[in-house]
Length: 397
Ligand SMILES: Cc1cc2nc3c(=O)[nH]c(=O)nc-3n(C[C@H](O)[C@H](O)[C@H](O)COP(=O)(O)OP(=O)(O)OC[C@H]3O[C@@H](n4cnc5c(N)ncnc54)[C@H](O)[C@@H]3O)c2cc1C
Image 1: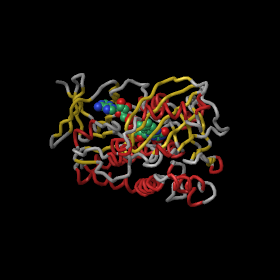
Image 2: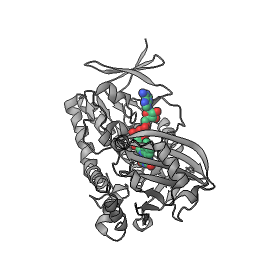
Image 3: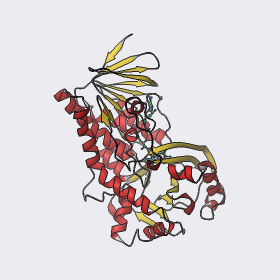
């Protein structure tokens, strides 16, 4: 059997995998990037690119002006609307803070990143190749793909999402439903009643706490509509998320009229969200986990793209140190865990406690009512929705 050797193998070409490859593009390392899908590929998501995502993209060797000027499959979003359990709402404008966010179908956004990554001279792409086994030896990691080809490297990056094969192969941790969210998404055409600022709308209805129903406007008169809810509550309350979503769209007094003339473009599809509300071990001997594989999703909003990109950048910096010191062992890789949590933990913890506070409808009403008038509440809410960093006045690192 023919085995190809690389300096690093990256499994998964979503935002975490592509950005780690991009962040290594100016190095002399020989990089393999494997994805089981053929691009463009869909990913179940709310499709919101928060201001934090925009900030992270600007730190990468990506031509950011091409995202702004040439990438058309996006809609600029200038506000976030929070609808309280009592149906009162607050609109937080991003314009006042000179921030930009976008909504872009993942089939397009992920393809944009993938196309940029394909241009990197030191990155070899293995597209449409699912991995079937990972073998560790004292000297290296060997990855076998389902087509029978095998690749070898001193270290592997697991950026293969919420159901990470790399994580399952190299770690034995079981998912904890208290730190997972269940999410379901539909695409519609012709939903009405969006605000002039293209606000993304989060509706915190009683029956969905801790979680929310969302309506996000998309280009071409489309909308991304869905529900996310903590998995332990979905099990405890025996909720069928698909029925709940259909029921809200057809009967909820606060939104049903907006769907009167809307048509379904893509039916309900679900996917888990591993939340960053608990610290985990995200590295070991000859491996690092990134993005959803490392459970870095914001526990309040469910946004994970910004932290996936951030982890891609941190992982690339760490891989360069591994090669310059020739250290790939678990003790050395602990520095990666430390750096990830140094950059993310304060906010993840704050967002988790805000989520816990908002589980009670009266407290949720209070937060949303004060989201505009009280500057502390406003900062907490903006941090929770990845608009601004609560712990720093400068752009997040
Ligand atoms: C319903 C829902 C709504 C969400 N809404 C938002 C939102 O609006 N904004 C936001 O920021 N975040 C949102 N998220 C979270 C966001 O989707 C993730 O945090 C983000 O996609 C993580 O990126 P990633 O690169 O870690 O993983 P992914 O984007 O999942 O990419 C993983 C890649 O690995 C590949 N792969 C998997 N297994 C293998 C294998 N065995 N071999 C080879 N390749 C493999 C997959 O094909 C995929 O391309 C949402 C998530 C859900 C489920």
